[in-house]
Image (cartoon, rainbow, N blue to C red; front, side, top):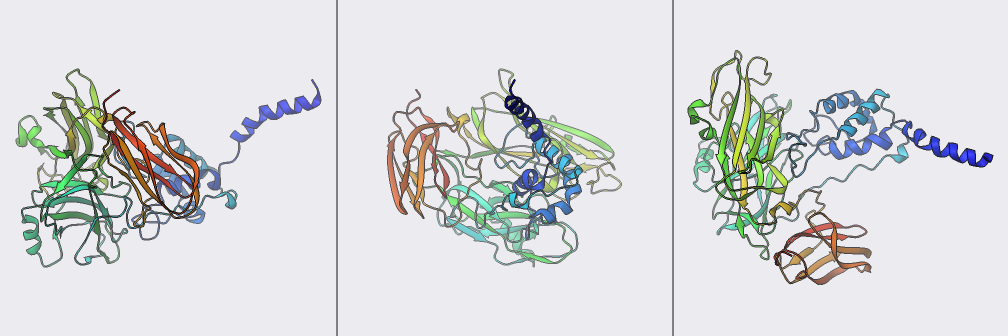
Length: 525
């Protein structure tokens, strides 16, 4: 064989091996992981206790990062990602965890600084878009720097003179360093307002709940959980004159702080009226064998409670909210169908009260009529539980206090319609819209005929617009690739040749990456 061919052969054989042995570096391997999964909370003004925004900061904490990622303590995501899938999941893959460990073991080398990715631009104002109504706490709330948790409910009058159809509710922390998580509900009875009036301070104290019986809830806030819009034709109604309640958990802080948080409320578009109102139900101790009387956790014991709830019609689950206090250890929720099939809903292997939240499925989950929902929760009332508020352990029953416990799972759903399983809930990918978001509107929606699409460009660019099916595969080209000038543009296209179902309008340009859900209501093909 000629010498040149031998050299080429050696190079081809050695190439993959040489690449696999290339040293792992911050610039090439680690920066993107940290910036994507950690920095949103670990930066100035946010809740993370240290900043992770550059090599110097990250390498300083390298050993700790290796440890907390190896035990899946960080990033803080409660549900088991192999059991079910939710909007806004913030988890690391096994490969990413191993890569971090290998990098730390290698001495945390930086590599070539010129190859480091830029720090992301994090959203401000809103992750969802331009709100229709903004409700802000009437005054700043003073948080004493005593290294203790503080739970406070604030009453925000909506001021609505008529009921409105709601597409999304987004909590915006005023002081991200202090706000650990928040729960959101509404009250039409005035009970919460009366409780607020009984306290000299702004708001009233309530641990783990709202202190009153609420008439409806919305997805809450904790770092990493995204606010999401309901799918087309689905939403909830906020009644006339309702008070919005936000129960805020302020994290233990060594210094005094203040917070004045707000809510962004998004109304349903007039071209997207609610056809199916979101309904809510709950699994409670009433669903245990023997009912409430069985919900007692004796001292020095680990106890598991198992409740069931029957489903009387085909439903599509939208979100789920498991809730317990400091004795809680795990949660599992699943449904068994009449055909004895199992539908996974949520599994939290290591419950942490401080990271609770409501979780929205990336695709609605069908639960057939006559299925049975099972809810299992374990509680550790021993001294081995470092979060046990009583030492020595005491007998515990239901209640809203710090030393009480709860067994509660809230579920949001709508009556099932064919094709619900294919609806991708908006928010499964980051939304780049800010308060000055570009115009991007499609109407009518839903439709079975002609669609009008209006959009705005802030600069000349080459763009492409496609209509994609539920799997993200383009099924119709709407425009482009072609160059478009700055300004307003309009495209018209028909969908009466498409099967009924959920689609996405996707616009890609030089500085734009936008999507818009579209429900086609034609006859199934």
